[in-house]
Length: 354
Image (cartoon, rainbow, N blue to C red; front, side):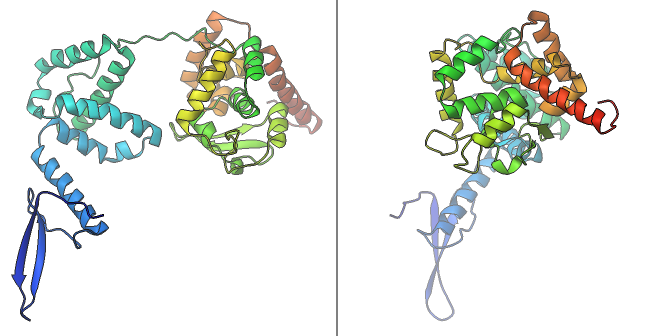
């Protein structure tokens, strides 16, 4: 079915051989369109001309700056999931501030207007309000670096959402409750998270090819760090027993790779059924850090496994260990055993200290 496009000028010219040739132009920009009407090439050419015209009309505005940022390497290097969420935040920013001229933005007196908008959003959704203003502040910071503006009016601001999850770690009873309520597929996801300390997105995308039978090697999507995680005996046994039904290690009960939203829904439903709805998947990452610390690992060793910076790993330990010293002993025993086996092997082989 041919889509009827508006905003096209058709110009017909008589050629030297007497035939009539039609040429098509994007009305707003005057750009000549490629291909014939009804073809994919023509539609793509029309859409590109429209984007170019919109960008030209918005030159010197917040909308223009946002589009320049989204076309930059700074945006391209972000993880796909970060860009997906960021695009939604920036769309809301465009709707509110898109037509605002950049000379107004860079005026220090514009700050109260941005903070007032943030406060109005925060009245109902404080976390979302923080995300939107932070995303806009990042665009302004990029624009400042590249000379598009001379001042970032929201370089700093007070967050409306303050989450304190420092005491929310998975204890033995939590792990047992979730394992009882969860499917084998979710139990494997739980074990991977506890024994590797990796983010949910990285674990859902983790392919079998990343596991060589002894360790997992992966490049983290958010930080782009390459991490090498030796498998504990318990994790190695679980991976050996898991059927390989897809390229990814973690799959649905039907054997298909997980969609992020679906995994979140099923995980949340299982946590609720287990009576631990207050615990999130991300809390397993902090739990893994504290488990490794209780196993005797140093901060550099922990950071090497989880991919945190050493400073960040230390901050996690400061938060978690200050609140509770009771950890998942049944889970950490596997890590202790792995470490003892490694040290025993080094001593038998005449190796140095670990």
